[in-house]
Amino acid sequence: MARRRSSLGFLGVFGRSSDLRQLDAALRAADLHPATVPEPAKLTIVNLMKDHFGETEPPVEAYGLVAAFFAYCLSGPEAFERANGPEARKLIEERMETALAEGDGPDAQLVLLAVHANLIHPDVLSRYDIDVED
Image 1 (tube, rainbow, N blue to C red):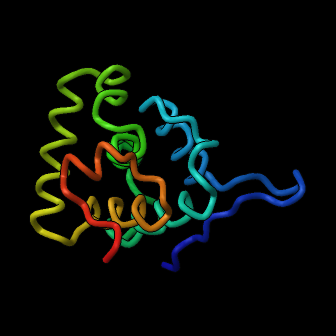
Image 2 (image 1 turned 180 degrees about the horizontal axis):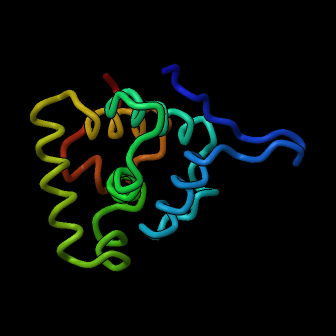
C-alpha cells in the first residue's frame, strides 16, 4: 500500500493531515508549542516516523515518544524537566546518549534535524558536546 502524504492544508479549504495534527497534539503534551516548530521540520518528523515504522501511518503512541524527544532537544534539559518531570528527563537523556553513541536511528535523525534546522537548545549542544560546525 502506498504511503499517504502529509498535508499542511490550503487556504482553509483542505485541512491538515491527521499525522500533522497528531504531532501538534503530542508536541503540546510535551509542553512545546507547535508554532515553535517550523512546518518543514514537522513534515520531516512525520516522514521520518513513516520511514522508521514502515507503515502508511505511524502508531498513535509513537507521536508522544517522538514529540517528547524533540521537545527535549528544543527546550533543553531544565525546561523539559520542569514541564515533564525528572523521570521523563531521565528517559530522554538515556535515549539521547544511545542515539549519539550509535550515530544512526530515529532519535539520532531527530537530533540531526534539530541541529540543521538551528532549533536545538544550546544546553543540549554543550551537555552532549554536539559540534554544529561539521
